[in-house]
Image 1 (cartoon, rainbow, N blue to C red):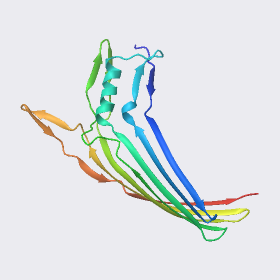
Image 2 (cartoon, rainbow, N blue to C red):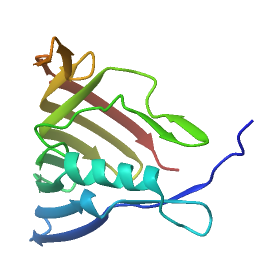
Image 3 (tube, rainbow, N blue to C red):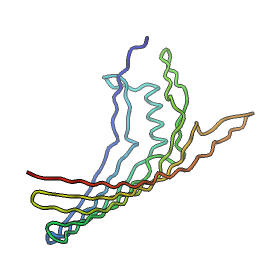
Length: 194
């Protein structure tokens, strides 16, 4: 029997800047930039929050395999009249994973506690994300209808196992399978105010 261990962690810090404006109550425009620094992640053990060999290993892996993520968003809405509006937007996020990031299957031993760090072998490194949206809205004093379409484009390197193996003193790296995570989504909302 092993006593449960409490962990504390400091999440990555974020910086967000946005700006927006409207013209003549008919055109609205907005832009946003967000910076998320994964290198600032920190793991601590126990309520007191101290470091040990395991938390240091996790922190080191985060710093080596994750990057700072930049996200840019821009959008606009135009009203043809007080009831009908058209919307469009674009969102771009850089990849969080370093190109050489991998899921380590290393067995971490901190005697007398044994920690098996992962239970699955597959992983994927996702690349930059692009998202396009457009929509249409109709509003009256009591009824509203919205239709939105979103197209997401993203590629990833998929690995079924750890990314290398050794045989006869040589190291062989398993090739990634490039996958496309492109997808479309159509959303419709109907509402009535009373």
